[in-house]
Length: 178
Image (cartoon, rainbow, N blue to C red; front, top):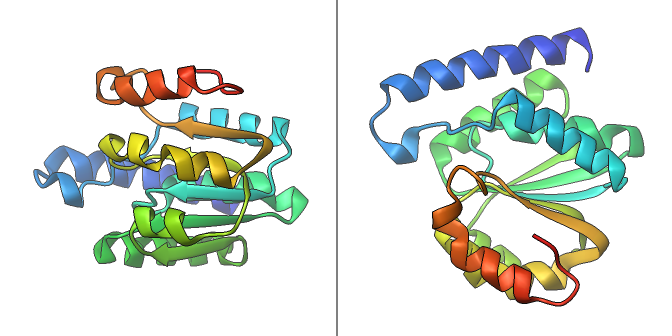
């Protein structure tokens, strides 16, 4: 990461922590991934040479910046989905500040509708949204995942009970490993 992106990432980490500490409305919290998770996503994406990335759950764009940075050497692209107008506005501004908007396609839409309609195929899919929806998305996620691609669900360890059914379904699907 160049110095400007490093500075922005640090700023967003601080903002997210401070904002979430005082915000009581769950829908308005940033709920950003940790820096360690961002670094792990970067490693995973580079390992599979990801160029086409889908992120479900943009928030203020913190995780999207990690994803966009990871695809930049391969001139890849990230499609990121968010429903909250409040968060979309913040994310757009952060993408511009990072000068990564050319790598990011931010869509204000419902993930279920997007997954049902898209014909795109992705090398890497990052789920960081309403965990209760993952199981309903499973068939569509399989359809749009490129051969050899990865699906990563955030909070799979910290909130394992919330995705236990999803994890079981994935584990029971031939060709997939949890």
